[in-house]
Structure formats: structure tokens, C-alpha cells
Length: 278
Ligand SMILES: Nc1ncnc2c1ncn2[C@@H]1O[C@H](COP(=O)(O)OP(=O)(O)OP(=O)(O)O)[C@@H](O)[C@H]1O
Ligand SMILES: [Mg+2]
Image (tube, rainbow, N blue to C red; front, side, top):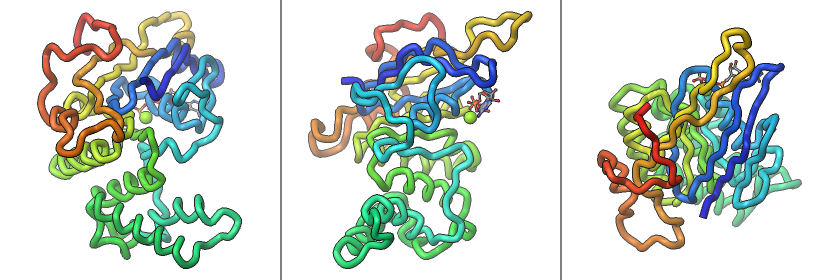
């Protein structure tokens, strides 16, 4: 069952065609890694999946229904240049989305509702490895810790789809490795569908169940703005994990496989057989 369906998607900015003719069907539990040249429209594509921008053409369906024209809790995001609230502690940064969602018109939570938020935040702090940093402010965190916080913030409302825009680009190789383990664990625990843009091709192969490549297929030297990027390769790497509810208890075979090199004869997710590696 596909959770995300993109049909005939195209995006123009001020008469410049950025994306064109994008069709994609994503199975629930997939970990799609997205690569492509700088400026080809990867972040634009993620903003459209988020509902932050409308496509010029085509449509995006989530569970068969067109996505509403605004970000919703079912889609979490970590941006290329992420933003956490500098004046809030780590704990309060994570609590804020829950408080906004649950307090509604009241402004603040009290009693049991407040204790529930504290418990959920404590659990999340533990899962993202920041349990000892809850009282610190973002400016007092290392780059890796800030990125853990940004991921925690994207996960706090338990999204079904997590969108990651080069989340580990600025991190040292050792810290990157820790973050890969973290994101695979979170993916495995939640059964969510992940879309991750990266410039690191090794990371793309290592983490993804499916690798999607964006590039321009058509160039016209007389009209360089006429054609946009599309999906030029769509490589199945390993099977997506089944939805959380359908998975047996114990270690998840898909996540275990994700730490291994891809099997050369992995079954295609899309039925397409690419004729060359990117
Ligand atoms: N709001 C906007 N208005 C006009 N043009 C835009 C806007 N957002 C992006 N663009 C243009 O669309 C193209 C795609 O931008 P985008 O940020 O999606 O690329 P990208 O693939 O994420 O690049 P990078 O790998 O460098 O992050 C670029 O040419 C950019 O200048
Ligand atoms: Mg980008």
C-alpha cells in the first residue's frame, strides 16, 4: 500500500521550470534517499511534500487524499538549515509542539495533561540521546546535539512521514555515523516513511530502501529555463519495512538489512529497471 503518491508534478518559479513530470509511488515504511545536483529542486520537492508550497502542476496524495495546503502533524521535517528556538531549553523546544497541539485555546497545559507532555518529552530525550541536556539551550549544544534536537522536534508529533533535507551534511564523519544509527533506530521503532535528501552518495546507499535521483533529462541551449529536473533513476535497494502494526516483535529484518550493503538481486519496488547506476 503506498502512503505517498506523486502524479505529474511540476514546479515553475517566475517562468523558470524547476521540476517537471514527476511521478512517484512510495510504499509505507520506505526509506527513500534523494540525490541530485545542487539547485535541481530537491528541497523544493520536500517543501511540496510538506505542504508548505503548492506545485504548479500535478498533485500529491497522502493515503489517497490530496495533501492539505499547509504543514500538518502527519509530516515532520528537518530542514537543510534547521531552526530550533534559541530562547527555549532543549526540553521546552520538544514540549512546545505538543503544548500547541493540546492546549488549543487555553495557551497552557495543566495537571495531568502537563505531566503527560513531560513524560513524552523525557521518553523522546532518551531516544534521541539528549537525556542529559534537557535544561541546556540550543546555543550550548554541539552541532550533532543540535541536529538530534531538530530530529526530536520533527518526531515529537509522531509523523507518518519524516522529511529530512541534508540533515547530516554539516557533521563530522564520526558523528554522522552515530546519527545514521539514530535515524535507523527511530525509523525501525516507528515504522514511519522517510524521505531524505543527501549529497553523500554512500549515505544514500547505506540508509535507503530506495534511491531516487533527480536530474535534468532535457537541455535546450537556446532556452535554458524551459526544462526542469525529473526523476532519472529510481533504484530499489532493499524492501521497505512493514507498517509498525504488522511487524512481529523483536529485531526488524529491514532495519538490520539497512546496515548491510544492498543485495544485488533486490526486488524492484517500482517495477522499473534502471539500466545504469547514477
Ligand atoms: N521560492 C523560490 N523562488 C524562486 N526560485 C526558487 C525558490 N526556491 C527555490 N528556487 C529555485 O529553484 C531551484 C531549486 O532550488 P532547491 O533549493 O529546491 O534546490 P536543491 O536541489 O535543494 O539544491 P541544493 O542541493 O543546493 O540544496 C533553484 O534554482 C532555486 O534558485
Ligand atoms: Mg536543497
